[in-house]
Image (cartoon, rainbow, N blue to C red; front, side, top):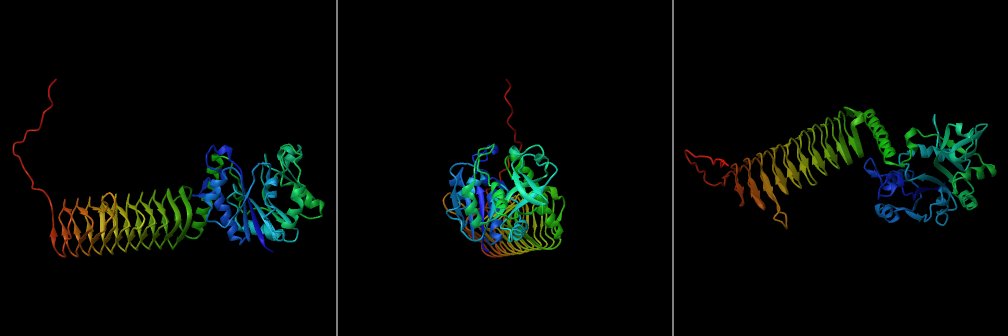
Length: 454
């Protein structure tokens, strides 16, 4: 039976106090709605129908590359009204999972169990039992079977004592949605069309309503304000950290770790506190990441040690390298094995060969550096003339003295030496010495200027 996914994403999110629509607020580096769409794709949904409203153009633009059908809810008249807007594009056959764009953490496992439980009944919901269900629609049962969902504002005192509540996640036969949704009424305390009313319709049709509880409670937590968003961020990150540790990653303190993407890793990877992993990253065996590092879309090979407060962005690092502290690898940085990049060294769009070193205060941009070369402290490649960028090529076993400026385009040959403090504007031949500096002047018995007396 084919599965459609309907995502409610029309809310404004007033309590966020933001110009950004609520479903575009970030969780673990991705919009809330992105999490829901990604989960839907894992279920091999035949079609993903997303209901938009407030900030619709922004939402659609953010997901322009996704294969999503967009349906507008121009008036915010309740969840039942929102789903009703999908009927013109909703297939008559199959089933639909109905999800919320501001409930980002529901898992493939929970949704698959809901689908399986709903196969025979044609309708099912995800519920959760808690100590205090204030504010939520209560699950009313009789002899264990669901009889109704009563919204908190419409519930009597007895019903408000019920601890099982509706999470707003449904699985419903599409033919039944086409039958039930046009019959919804807004005669309730809110004056809205409740999607929950289809439960009463199902029971009236003699159907049993299946239910499952989520694997983890935070899966069904919604986001209405920044406090809830921050709390859910920590729960989500704690869960990710736990899974990484179960697979062998050594996190020094899982409460101070953020994964905002996907991490592939080898054995005995060690990550210190306050590290942020973004995008798609790969860490080889025995890689160590020091405190406060940010690693984004980067591959680091086995045995490499990254010292604290280094930042990597779209870089590739070979095995047994030593990086940092306070190093910055920008997009296009490619480091071979055994490379040393020290404190306050920035590498951009450059390749550095096996065993080469730049240990202090250097900028290497648009450069190609061979194996076994040494880049002295304060060296920079002058790669930009204000309009265009040019390349610096440094051969194997070259020695670049401290505080040198290499004005590109320039080629430093194998085994060449550049004297400290030089500004190199022409190519340097192999195994030669090049230096450029003004003559030192000394004045004996020099008297420093004195402050004038007032």
